[in-house]
Amino acid sequence: MFGQSMDSARDAAGGVAGTVLIPMRFVWPYGGRSVFLSGSFTRWLELLPMSPVEGCPTVFQVIYNLPPGYHQYKFFVDGEWRHDEHQPYVPGEYGIVNTVLLATDPNYMPVLPPDVASGNSMDVDNDAFRRMARLTDGTLSEVLPRISDTDVQISRQRISAFLSSHTAYELLPESGKVVALDVDLPVKQAFHILHEQGVFMAPLWDFCKGQFVGVLSASDFILILRELGNHGSNLTEEELETHTISAWKEGKSYLNRQNNGHGTAFSRCFIHAGPYDNLKDIAMKILQKEVSTVPIIHSSSEDASFPQLLHLASLSGILKCICRYFRHCSSSLPVLQLPICAIPVGTWVPKIGESNRRPLAMLRPTASLASALNLLVQGVNFLSDPEHSVSKRKATERKDEEIGILLYF
Image (cartoon, rainbow, N blue to C red; front, side, top):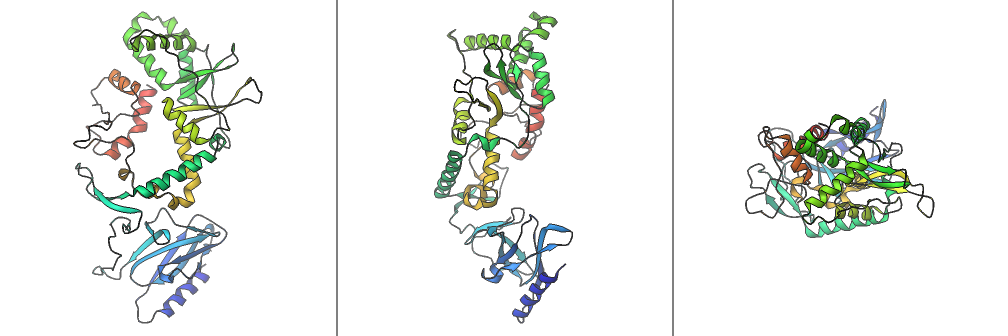
């Protein structure tokens, strides 16, 4: 099982006289037809062949004797340079490389490259990192890298080029289901269907018009809960059972006219996209129209009759598509090499003097459900409990649980 690997180890041991060498096992567990190893210990000139592990044809390994110290390495898989994202890695002279630190005794202090940080031993001397920033809000104290403006621009250009050259067809799964609702369906039954199907929104089909006319989403459910709380005594049980989606949409338009303060009609057109629309246009449509999803609808006729619902596009789906595309070449996007807290995205607890940022919405356990619903209607994606969220990470981990409880009350 170790034939080729042990030969490489013996060759390495024989080539370095008078040096204490430590056998090191390198593993590539992600499959491939031909896998090789190269690194600083071979001066990046030699490719060491890796052998499949007996009984695990997708796992490749090689044993190589290394002197104590700091080493970098990469894998050459089927003609492409790769690194293992589950092992320590840094940006280096040869792109993203994995690192290993070997010591013979507890008192051994390796000679590392200058300005190497702790953790994953990130080489901040690389052009990808211009300066260091320290968070001083009392929750994080480690030194975090910041990306240069040049690398930000490179990442933006490459992502923009990808989104502009790929269409909505990239988002369609190999198999799946789509759910559409009849506008004459009772609202109560419609929400039961959404819950049973495990979806949070569905396009609405009008048989009379022969087209999709809108969507029913979790925000509608929240608004209905609010209206029941305010005027529930005015509605009979029969009205609750028979109130249709179309009737609710008309009532929602009336509420919008009241809320805009002018009494003028407020109608939102049905926002959708086609399968040949590029991902950049779809993402911009989601952001500019302030919607969570965009139905992908296709019609083979010129008059757009007999439309077919193919998929529901969302920003999370587009992000997954980006990750799939750049999964094996993430070094081409420098911004992906940074920790999330070093990138100014998302909603965070604001620091002193940063009043221009959107605050993190928080509720205490004793707050009423109505208060939570009001915040969610205002566009808050999830709520944090300050008494239990001891860190930003904890608040994020509670997201799915809190959303699920509130939306499927």
